[in-house]
Length: 270
Length: 328
Image (cartoon, rainbow over all chains, first blue to last red; front, top):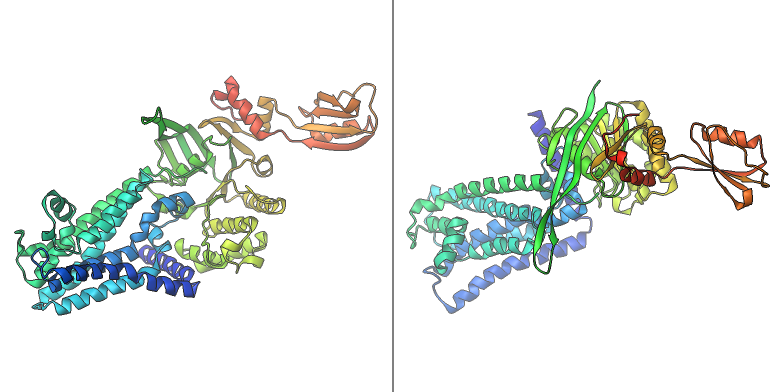
């Protein structure tokens, strides 16, 4: 147990160091902090604009869709804050940071995440949370203890899900260095996908993204359960509660991908 | 007998894609390390050398758990480097000349403090080791400077300290003196010499600089094309491959016949007989100089070290170079 405590202390020390490095240039940090809200605001505005021309989207009203938007942006922005920078893995390989962390008595992935934690994205995560809170309070949800629990668990599961996605797609660059575009299309594409009711999409595209990759369980299914609506696509009502399970499966898959990737790691010359 | 490093038949293969024709690409296997056997005892100081691309760094990365070997058996401090990476990390220190273990934006002092947490070192031990390094490496004047502002020599002294603060049993150094100025080079060498003499730490260093090896290592392992081509002392390497130190003597006036010295054949006569070049075979450089001084008036003397790169290149070309190494 002393060992575990020591490890936690070590990770905390790495986090403190990162905070000190990033806030060294105070003005630029504050500017970054503000600038980073932009992208998430844009997501919400897009949905609002869509509802300016239509009253329903895939059978859902604006306030219902906003619950999905809130779940999606809260989960994505938080995962992006905590894990998103792992997409810079090719840079870590090139600069030797990966070698450096592999030489230390700590996990390589947590070290990389903490040593390059983009604290300026904190503002975005907080904005995502605010959107979720506003959406949940204005959607007219009939609150039960179970729904309160789901409102807490579902965004956390979403964070784990998106985090796993970031890690899994980044590991592709262990094999194929120019994989950044592919990784982005899955992670950012996933964020956009989860901002709308699944009913908007059709055919194989819906089958793959919503169910095979599991994006339906980030926002759509939990939102249905929170709103007390039956799924027009026929999944039972407990599907909304499946999101933690889906997230854990994704996390396990990402962990395996990471381990295999590190074993295949080739390092760079001297 | 306690083996700190025990590697047998260590191999590393990479697949590379090579363009053939306009669109077609072919997979090719490149063997970077091709069956290296290496046994290092506790307290030894080993020079691991070879030309660029010989597989030095790849070997070190396999010994430290960074790279997974494609074949062979390896134990470092009794542990399997990749499978037991984090445990091994507590027992080894690594300095890669081109890589940094330090935090770029923080003062050097903070990096040391962070490493204390990372390696879970008791505060007392940490302070004692840091005090020792500060004294030997003159760290005090730049301890509060952010690492990015340090000169290469200062940074390297910082890296050495960082690698030793957890009291590793083995210290791996990949090109620790590359790019350093003369003074820093000397500081690093002196420090490593001190460490080597203390005898608790096993040192493995790769270098291109023969002077590093001569100062520090009694044992030399030469690899080329991923294979060990020599494992023994430096003297054994030179005597085996006929590379010798040269003594170049500048005379005031040419002699009628250049003197014959026992154990040091005359290599060349230059500058109309005013410059004589002797090769040290069984005789040492001092004996050659003393012998010459008795026979002629010397204006200047210089000693030319054999070039290790050249020796290694010759070693690889020669047929016996590819055979199993002899220990000398």
